[in-house]
Length: 357
Ligand SMILES: NC(=O)c1ccc[n+]([C@@H]2O[C@H](COP(=O)([O-])OP(=O)(O)OC[C@H]3O[C@@H](n4cnc5c(N)ncnc54)[C@H](OP(=O)(O)O)[C@@H]3O)[C@@H](O)[C@H]2O)c1
Image 1: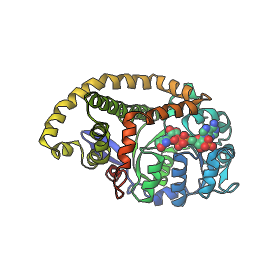
Image 2: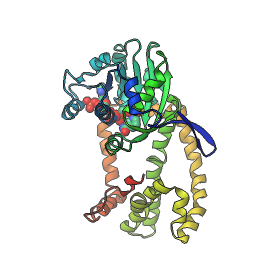
Image 3: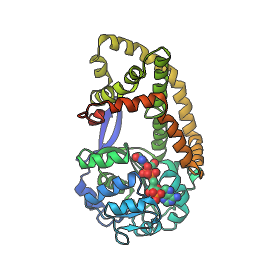
Image 4: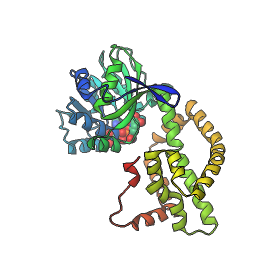
């Protein structure tokens, strides 16, 4: 463990140098890690741990599509692939990686499978923090730990394969065995994290729900729509509006910001762009600050969770979502985007920002 300064703030971070894979193997030598769920995080974390030499089994619903996906990845029924409850019974570290809505649904069955001294592992603070809505209250005879990768499952696997890793936060929610912290850190290293930073279940979920509703997706998409529509209303062509709003951001600038920081970006663009962007930055910040404050309040009050659980558990959720996404796909801005992408030259490096970001 090292204390590191981020600006003037000291934080606890754990790198792979301080907590090596060898050490993780020692800590988890007698553990069977049961990964419940094989959607996005499940495959990434289980395959990384399997490749790293840990004893891993997978739990999935034999009638669901994840079962077949797991089989295709080499998990063998009755050897390393089991129905959810059976995997939970066999595991000593139970990685609860079904969707957050499914955690609420499956919890009554899974909690009966826990044995004294097991570790119940999450990759999100959601179910525990909003226990009043999810009903997920672990018994007092288990450790409750979290490792939350700060990236999609696809990146967790991809970055593992290229040796870089994805940063993760970690937390201990309950320490029954006295080993909860080392189990959390060891699984964090086992799943291929870059560095690990300390958090709590509550802080993780509050920041995560704010981030994805905010800058990572909701705010970004909203602000793109606003700029595109102003440009179009003033007679700019779809191609011009899209390139100035999305293409240049995703294919050039954001990767450079990821690699070098914002001050570098300001000092490496035209002086015209530089002066204007610096002047307008505070207007956008001030205009959106109250929206972010509203958003955080809605997250902290549990309102966002109430909305999410209600929507996700509706029978027609998938159909309604498909219709919503169909509509977005057919909006002029994203139709223009599809056309712009189709016009990229053959040797275009897909997602150029990726290599920086
Ligand atoms: N997505 C990410 O990249 C990401 C990033 C960081 C943290 N996390 C966290 O990681 C955890 C897993 O998220 P995820 O995105 O990987 O989940 P996901 O892809 O949405 O999970 C889908 C899995 O849940 C199973 N499932 C759904 N409904 C079920 C039910 N009623 N009974 C049993 N199984 C059911 C699915 O099985 P079938 O296919 O058989 O239906 C599938 O295996 C969550 O806590 C999430 O917040 C996710």
